[in-house]
Length: 201
Image 1: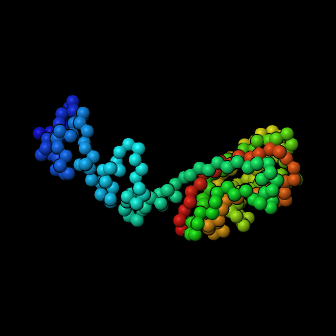
Image 2 (image 1 turned 120 degrees about the horizontal axis):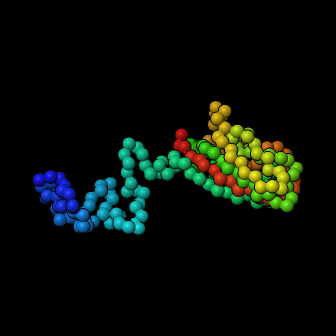
Image 3 (image 1 turned 45 degrees about the vertical axis):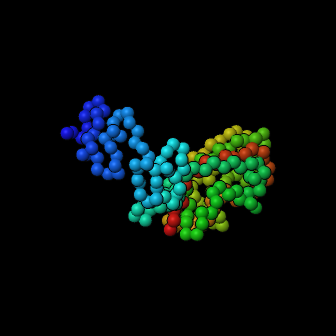
């Protein structure tokens, strides 16, 4: 008989050879009992139901790929607010944007969007800011945005493709700080949206 017939007809038992799933289970209306499902790797049928959380230890992709690697080496998005007080203090205490990832890992910033929510008093004392790795002068984007003035601004900061070596960024946070000097006045704020990956070396 054919493998499947139009209109949701049953598949014959002779064609169902694994795990005792009967032809009555395989049609348009029937539900297959979870007790008949076996997924291997310790993943049992009780895990496969609406709303259930599957333990990471039960997820096996083979070829040395584990869930922890997949969770890291994907594009992530972080949104960070920077207050006026934090801007004024950045020359002494840079604003952490992404925390250090851990030994043998590095953060790769794909792009950064910076929004200036200007206040009644523009920032002064210095003019531009930069994103770098902590304790490094390595510029992670192609331009250094000016955050002075009393008009809102938005900047799209693309990845600095001129960088040849990222050794200085291994296990380092990504920070925001003035390009030089310090901001001494101003009551606006900043918002940072960054897309990034974490790579295990």
